[in-house]
Length: 283
Image 1: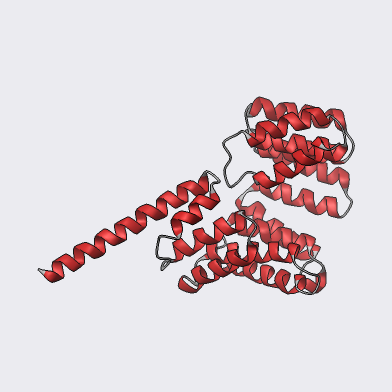
Image 2 (image 1 turned 135 degrees about the horizontal axis):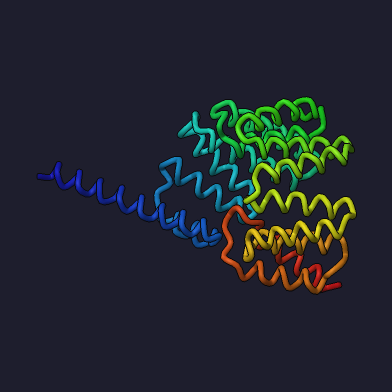
C-alpha cells in the first residue's frame, strides 16, 4: 500500500509541475515574462524544459547572463537538442552586443559556435540557420564571419524556403552595395509569399532606407491591407518614420497603438517601443 501511495504522490507531483510549466509558458507567450519567472520559481527546475523557459524569460527581460546560465543547464540535460544550442547562441550574441570590448569577442565566438552546433544538430532548425547567416554576414573574419560563409548558408536556406532564401540574398547584396540586386531579391521574396506581411515590410523598410519614400509608403499601405491591425506594422512604420525624422506625430500614435496591442515574443520587445516613444516625445 505504501508503495502505491508513493507512486500516486509522484504522479500527482509530476502533474502539478507540468501544469505550472504550461501556465508559465502561457504567460511567456503573452509577454508577461516576470510573472512567468515568478511561477517557475515554485517549480523544481529539474528538467530541460523548465531551464529553457527560465532562460527565455531572462532573455526577454534583457538579463542575458542569467539567460545563458539557464540555457547551459538545459543543454547539459539534453545535449542533442538543437533548440537549447540555438538559444545559447542568441544569449551569447546579446552578451557580445552589450558587454565590454574585452569580453565582446569571447561572447561573439561562443554565439557562433552554438549557432553552428544548433544547425549541425538539426539542419531543419530554420531560426538557427537564419541566425547563423546573420552572424556570418555581420561578424568580421577574425570572429569567424565572412560573406562567402553567409552565401553558403543562404543557399541552404533557399533549399528549404525559397522566399527566405531571396531575403538572405537581398541582405548579402545590400552589404556588397549591390542595391538594385537587393531590391530585386526583396521583390522576388514578396512575390513568392504574397500573403506574408513580413515580406512586404522588408521591402517597405528597404525602400525607406534608400530614400524612396513614396514607394515605401505604398508598400506599408499594402501591408496594412494584408493585416490591418498588425502590431508589427505599427512598430516597423513608426521606426522608419523616427529614423527618417518625419511624420513624428504619426509615429507616436503608432507606438501607442503598438504598446496597447496583444504582443507575442515574436514581436519587438515593449522596451524598444517605449524607448522609441520616449525619443519621439522629446523631439
